[in-house]
Image 1: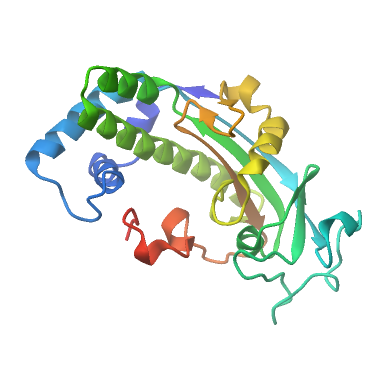
Image 2: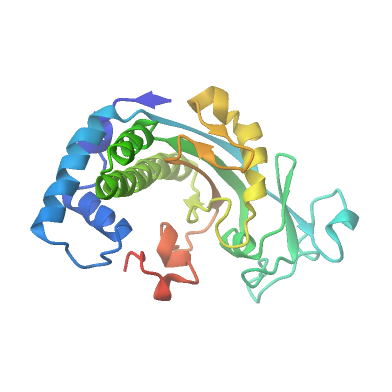
Amino acid sequence: MSLEPERLKKESGPEPERLKREIYRYLGFGRQLPDSAVQERVEACLEELQPQLTLREVHRYFPLEWESGKGDSAGATDRPSTAADRPSTAAGRPSAASGSSSAILRIEGMDIRSGALEKNLRGCSEVCLMAATIGFAPDRLAARASAAGQVSRAVMIQAAGAALIEAWCDQVNETVRQEAAARGKYLRPRFSPGYGDFSLQHQEALFRILDVQKRIGVTLTEHLLMMPSKSVTALIGLSETDERCAPAGCESCERAESCTFRRF
């Protein structure tokens, strides 16, 4: 899916001030406003960068199977677990401490062991896999700035790119929310490989399942890094019940309180 960059700026995208606050956060200012000189330079970076964005995304829905994780994963059964097989809380849903998985999550042939993801997906029987990118503009402009010795400008462009890809992912997330709501379902916070104990090794499977390179032009390096760098893959759980989960990121991160880049 390819969209004009104006959609990110004018339709349901982030408010300009909110977007700039996110950039300041990525620059390490936390909740504090930088001085006027920094604010003006950030504004200039945004004005140059936004018209050059190439917004693309792909998302698809798949059943989520839960399998017993007792013993080694090599000995796991091939059948989906029943409610009796799954470790449960008093509410009868799978439970796991972050970093320690007691179940195997199976999505389109991809087997995942992740306590953090298991916790995120409690009660879900379906997931949406998504990939999104804003294109090569941030990489290209940052490289030019670095080559010209403009290190601080390169850092600002990278921070702006990070905020813009998150804003684009939020819009894709909203599309998924609306599609799920039309079927009476609710979303869990999106969760990306490399977050918590959700291994980055799963990038290869996500790229294969979504045909990411063909669909949106993002490639994966041998070190599992995405090119363009301002690209995201994620998994979103769909539930029959509204758990009132926080939408994304810091709200569900165990390190939020001590993180320089937290949103709150």
